[in-house]
Length: 361
Image (cartoon, rainbow, N blue to C red; front, side, top):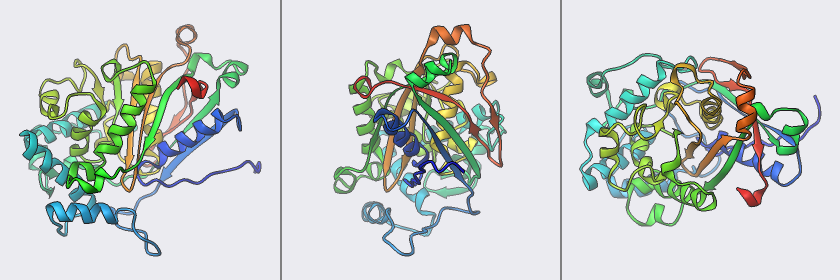
């Protein structure tokens, strides 16, 4: 044991990206040159259930707001929260159940090429629609499974990267923003907002306003698709398409290989799995592999700018942009490999992330 300081964080499903966010701040503050962010989860069987027996559940107000708008039943609470968001989008914009199923179809298809994915089987659209109904338009194959897994990222200052000759594999965090619930989450009688739409949009808007990039510049995305409904509404919150245009975005194939941007090449939470504390770091791992050209059969050709989206209701949303820190050094050192070991669901990675000073984020 080294006696070094350790911080334990818990932000529900965005715990992993919260660890990344904290590690980044520690380096930018000058309190460390190299920080390990680690996330893991060993989950109980079945749907998520409350664990806050000695305090108020952080989702209490979300559930109360949803129930006042759409009612409450005995289905799992997460499926109601996101399922009702889908129902609202369908009523408002004419989205069909098939659009939700197409998202799951895409993600299951992507996961076939991911050796770390919990599911590695391709399903037809008909199989997805015919799988057991969980809530509203959501069927079983449109919902993330319970998962065990771990993931890690090593973040380092630019000086540390130079000192240790790591330029060939360094990935730069261009920017990273965290947002939490706004008054609109609870005051506008919107199930989409209860499900995190506004905090995602706030984080994304802040990120793009502080960088030289826009949503149309992004090549590859790892998006928090705990349910197909959340991927659908998040397309719009991130600015990947205009509000109300998610169905067109899906039908056009602009969310997969050959389209404008590849969303969830890993298979996403629906197929790769969702070990809660590890998910944000697993997303980072996938995007680093994509930027380094190490994603094998699921490689997004020419990927130069990657976006990560991770949310935890109750609540925090983290949105980040990544690119190669030293592209020329990477080109000369294209043989560099990162080490990965798989656990039950397993994603455990080593990576080096170059940090720019705060003023350049």
